[in-house]
Image (cartoon, rainbow, N blue to C red; front, side, top):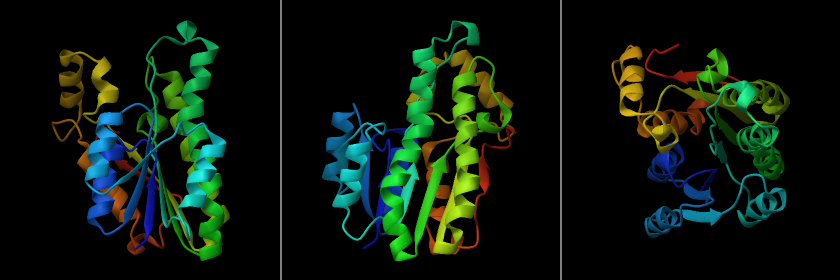
Length: 233
């Protein structure tokens, strides 16, 4: 049974992706930081959940060592957002957003990539955002970090393509997850109205794309950014 590792797997997109890949026949190993109750439920459902901050280089490599022959799939999903004017954004908050959203992807890829290279097979899937392409007012740090993840995807895809590894990116639109609970009901309704399909996205919308990128069928797709945004961009 092939193994899929998903960061930030206890809620939202990560959780939906974990169940989708389990349904596809993968052994799923997920990371989480705070959501112990959700992690316990997922363990009961056969998903291996490990408490790990994606910024922890040593712990990420411990997880990689525990996987056995190596993971076939890595989903770099863990992410945080911060909403404020740029002039109100302190340096430590800027660093935190980049460390989780971008450095975390580097750390877990660094940990799991060697086995993929040895096995001449791997699927690395990075979860960015439509704001990484279009930019969002009052979300400069978030937008910039997600744009960096897109550049990471394109460059690494070329680097590891000869080793039978694909690296691709998904850019979700406005998804109905806990990350967007900071917005009031009126704002969310307005975002749904701006989305041509007429609704907010769901974690399952993104998980379906993760499953495709994780499959052998995606072998000839390298360094691509798939917008799953209901036509927003």
